[in-house]
Length: 401
Image (cartoon, one colour):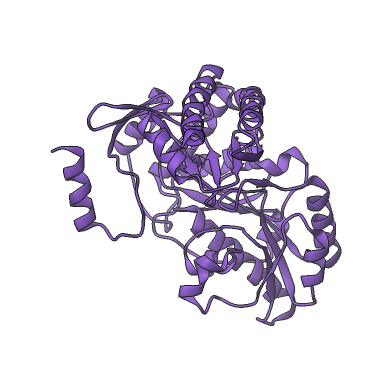
């Protein structure tokens, strides 16, 4: 069938909750994707920060094939070696002490919320505790994750939410402080806001929030689902500042394509929150997903992924800054951390992204006026140059209209 035929079939069968780009992808190789008609695309989205190692990494593929031939699933009534090994490796790279594997980032956020509320419940036996989340944040689409997502547009059709959630302004400590009261049990934020517009946390703000949490026995929860797993140049973005959370969430590049996430916590929180029967998942921590985690972490070290991110992100920032200067009539600023960057435009960017797709470059937005750059973490300078060349063609065409 032709590509349009597949798209037509999809529109007849799939629930229309996405306004998808008009392309059907067939395969990937390195940092490129190919559609079913053979057209090649430079991928600066990587499945929304998922495919950190690029496509067709042979060692990764072989590890999954080997596990499929052994064991895929048993449930959490039993132990399995890949889950034990994955938890150990994840503790090493994160500095956390206890791990709960989930199937997605949203589920990891749900677990973090439950952990914080159970911790507070065990302290005083009440159930009216509050969580402070951030405006313009995004934590997922499930009811709990949606409840702490700081964008009313996402929430309004699904009210009422879980309740007892307050919203403060990101990077504004006074706003956070004004929302704190005796019922506050946790403060939740993304170390780098993704969907909200690529806003990195300010070090001074994070330090003040951490000090406040320690002073009042409030739990600091950091959402590292998009910005974690090396995208910042550190395994987790908070490690750049040395400000450790009580609870953190991770997913996306954790499995590099296999659906898996986790929430983690310090030993103190682990010993004083969720107990047997409080939380569970049928698929979470299954051998296949955990084999993926193990191989991903091994390959990050073997292929020196963090070193590459630190080197290439400097070059990417330089080229994006140059582009912003050259096209100041369209671009207001660049912001971001590592290989999680955004260009802020003074008008909507949908037509630029569509034009780039036609020219063989995959980009996505973060809000109506921001182009987001989330390439595989293995990109080199020539890929940055290729991306800039195509994007510049699109911007020149935009100015000519």
